[in-house]
Image 1: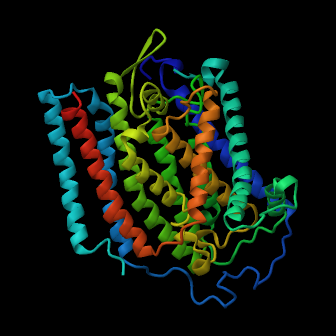
Image 2: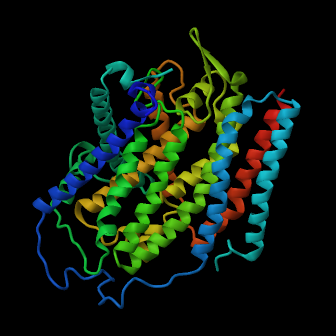
Image 3: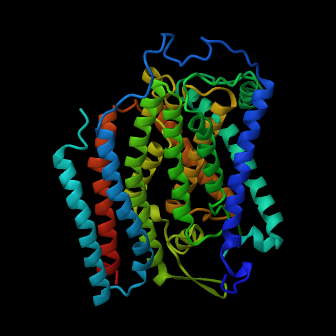
Length: 133
Length: 345
């Protein structure tokens, strides 16, 4: 550490959140353990079978699925990364003087930045990524 | 500025303890209340009575259900992926509790007052997707897997309009009163990512739903989809997928999913209140009363929507997100940014 005391850092602001997560996990585990102790524990080959509406399960559930889900995930990544960059911009952009050259330059830059995503979006749209049939 | 519990108690351990107690109590009461409320609202819409047997007007029905869940057998089906199956309820449940501690419910007191509160709430919301997919994949059940696939596709798709519509509010916050606000003799530089500042920016003028009606509607629809509520409840469409991703969960493990789901709804409503309805801002009554009143009003609207509209088809759901909501949200941001810098002098 470079000579900072604990109260000078943000640690005390964020530590409660970590502790709350730990407490929530403890609460959840306690609930599960309580059910394990209170509930019955009968076992059996048919009882432990995977539920498939009363049929005997056919194969496992480790199957291939539609490629469209993968495409949606890729488009989501494009937009998500865009949003990551837009949030810092959005929190500082209003501080720039309105109608000043600087403000207009930043407006133009962000328009261009979003335009690049819109191009990807239009490409995906024309490719039919969002058409489920 | 709101005082945090740390300022009030001084000792971080006591402050954290009180905070955790408060959050868990509020969330538990909310879940108990919401389940009862949902059954009553649905009964009212369908001209039934709803639960009437346990307690006055059936108010203790949910408590009875909880006790029943505790007494059920925890079934662990064959062929599961053990770490994924057992971790999934925790991963859905824990972030919900954490994000509930971030929301500013009052002017004077806050559980935490962070500069990046908005981002943290969205981050904790994102964990739900991971948990849902772990549950679906780990169960080794075809219904669960299909439900999880649908749920992940739906959740990540609707996250885009959700984040983009919240972005226009972040833009608005910094523009209120030149980005500064005076409280007493204190001048605060508004930070669009701080949830208390978002509320403060709305107290001096109109609520953001007036400036950003399109963003508010997009945000509300996205919240419905993110919490897997009807008409977007395809992940657990009971007529086709039994119960979706939590088909193989029983007893209190299922209870944790249920707890997470209803708490998510509550957090979504609270976040919408903070962003668009002015949070604790309101005349006469104290701040927390207004805050919870607005949140429960939104929850009522969510239930109203659920019991009024039929479920969408999956292709309609995805087309609605990508072809309508996302372009609309992008245009909304561009218009907002343009208006802030060019029109509004």
